[in-house]
Length: 86
Image 1 (tube, one colour):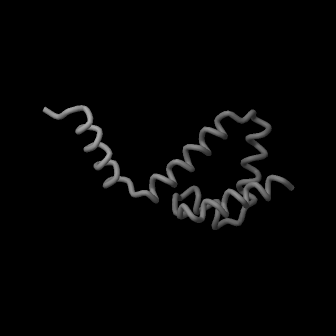
Image 2: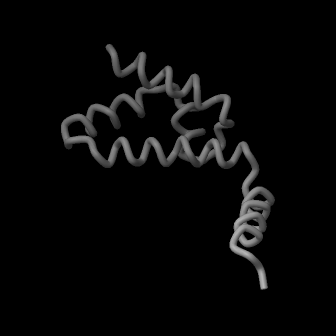
C-alpha cells in the first residue's frame, strides 16, 4: 500500500492540479477576510460594509464575483483601508 508520505505527496500534487497558485492566494485572502469580519462587533461590521460598498464598483463587484486577480487584491485592500480611515 501507500506510505503516509506518499499519500501526502499525491494529495499535494492533486491539490496543485485542481487549485492554481493564483486560486490558492485568492482563497487565502477571502478566508482571512471572512475570519476577520466574523469577529467584528455589529457596529464595526456595519461600518466595514458601508466602507466596502463605497469603494469603486469595479472593486467591490470584482471581489464579490471572485473576478479580481490576486495582484488586484492589494489595491482593493488599500482602498478599503484608505476609505475606512476617513
